[in-house]
Image 1 (cartoon, rainbow, N blue to C red):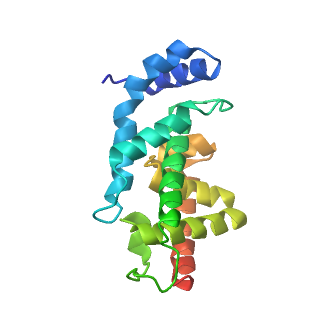
Image 2: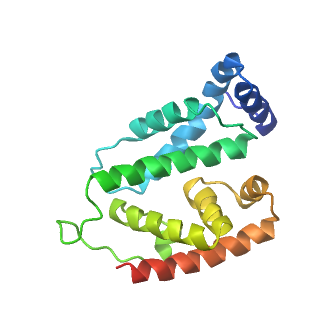
Length: 190
């Protein structure tokens, strides 16, 4: 698999958005490894024995990405932010269908603490985190986007700032405030 510059990826993404199917053919080998790492990072947070595998998550996200007809790709950061959001949505939907939100089931209750925001999220807490993120998005959409891009998307502060078109210091502030807000929200959702 090749290694491309962010500029080359952005150019290919824009060409693909404009209908150039050959751009997609050149793009796939350039983004595959990074998408696989993103999927692996998500799956590493899941419980042992999770029935969804890294490759299945990657394939499902890939199919949804190439099926996204109306997306006007801006650049590499935008692409990976959307990919991260799709992977998160796939895992949350999977967790919901598996009944992780039911009370009184065979699930072991896992408390949420601040480390959860920056460490591993068991599947059952992923649903709670998703609900908390939705609540945060209603109050402050940008802070929710920062969490999604940084935590779920694995974007750096600078890449997040680029996607959101804000200063890096704003991303850092939003990240810190969002972690505290999510910590409090998750404690209330026990």
